[in-house]
Amino acid sequence: MNSRLSRPERRALQRQDEVFLPQPLHMGTDPRSIAAHIRYVVHALRSPSAKSPSSEAVAHVLALHDRTVPKQAEKLLACRKGCSHCCSQMVVITAPEAFYVAAQIRNKPEMAAAVQEIARQTATLTLDERLGRNIFCPMLTDAICSIYATRPLGCRGFVSTNLDACIAAFVRGETPNIPMPNDSISVLYACRMLLLASLRLAGLKDGVYEMNSAIAIALSAKDAEAQWLAGADLFAGLQSTPPPPPQFESSIRQMMAFVAPTI
Ligand code: SF4
Image (cartoon, rainbow, N blue to C red; front, side, top):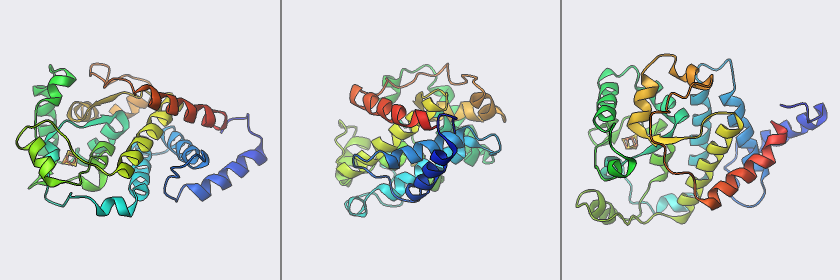
């Protein structure tokens, strides 16, 4: 916390955050909920004592996402265990998510090697070209995600209410037109913006990269995460997705302006 807040103000803010942190993200106009989570994620990313600050930060955002998606939206989903058509499309992730997944698969040599091989094979593709390639995710085992509990935000947020639409897009190669509940989309966007705002407030790069290429870099050295947290731009050689659209960028900046004086 910064000295711009007095000690009583800091204590009051901590008490306020303790109320909001275990709850689902408030999706209305009250900014105190999202501010509490941004403060938590920034502090996690800056925590010198954590074994993996990225993992702590990302695990918090993923759990927040899951408890915020309304149950009525989940009931609409056609997604089922063993249905993995969408796991052949390109997934994009932030650097902390890459370190989080790398930590899950570092001790699974075949899976780690498969990730690195896909990264090598697709290294020269533009993101648009990569988007056009359907490549099954190396984390899939017998059509089941082997890192399901820790899968990235993009995987969590990509859901469908219509299996036929998924088959048309991912099996027959038709133009994707996947119906998703509006609530699921809103929660995904809110959590993505929360994570980007937190990264910027922590003074870290907020790039979003193709998943296998980013994980391959996270796997490339045991201290890759420590290097990145210390300011090394390990992902500089990867293409980042285009910046957020203006309305999202504006929301991210509003979040940052609200929270910055309290960090
Ligand atoms: S990480 Fe899991 S959910 Fe995401 S694409 Fe890979 S197998 Fe599918």
